Length: 137
Image (tube, rainbow, N blue to C red; front, side, top):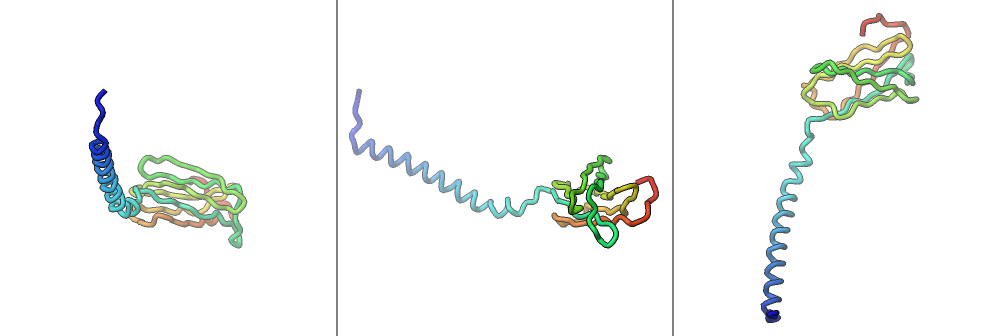
């Protein structure tokens, strides 16, 4: 087996390390340059949240909140906890949504989240009146 002179081995090792370090530094610089752009991207999603409130703005527990997608008519639902809150996450920002709540045969008025609304965090409180609403959500 042929032995390389120590000086040649040292030169090859340093050369390989320098190329690798240069490549790593170039990748790091590229990532650092693109990081602000990636942070600015919102990927087309937004969130809708709020509370279901009854008389005297008291939160309603156990209300069913409906979210209707205008593109495909899919309806998502959630049931409010003790504080009356609801949240729908990762909604497409190029779609209109209609949201309303129902509780004990009564309904809130419908609210529309428009695709023209550019907010990423939208808050709609839904109010259910004391008298029963007409059927036909």
